[in-house]
Length: 284
Image (cartoon, rainbow, N blue to C red):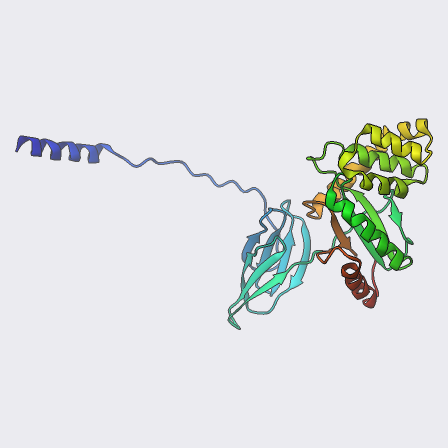
């Protein structure tokens, strides 16, 4: 009996002494998004690059994490909820009026700088194909001859703009990019480009020197140009533009500023290029 009452006493004493742990809660406002209509719902892409704000006037606003408005698109009236889908550019939009959930793809149109970038095709071509690539990437190496076919098929209609996007996992990618840009100074970017991709899996300083000799480039001029800080700035600019556009890997292709997701074949590119030409095309 005494043991029973002792147990009850200890239990009551523990209840009186125990208090839930309390923590001070503080709300820190990191950023305000200025929206010109009542926001209904918010979603964030899986990679954190885009913030989608659905507003009561049937519009979807796309922001960067820094709060920069990237674009606005109309959605069906009655849309009340938005959620991200299996891809970073795929959304689900729930509509209460017609009791539907739509799966939509957001095609942001980006603007890229072509100044100082190697190009093929006329500057006033109605279609611009912007390529972000890495000289040690096997997929990029496979795409290179396909883009040559695109150039041959649309010599006056398509302008190809080359952008370096060296991946961190590839140790020699930056040096290869600088070498190709240094060759551009002697009018040999594209031949150098082709040879780099043919040897994508064995690039090093010796291979670069072999290509330089093969193309009969002036050695001192080439080496001096490779060390030019302006070329490093150009590679850095390409990386920044790619990151801002959501490039997550290579190769990444944009046609008139819009991400290309079709087959990496001449016919795949032809389908999108023909559609752009039918719309009149517009350079980006």
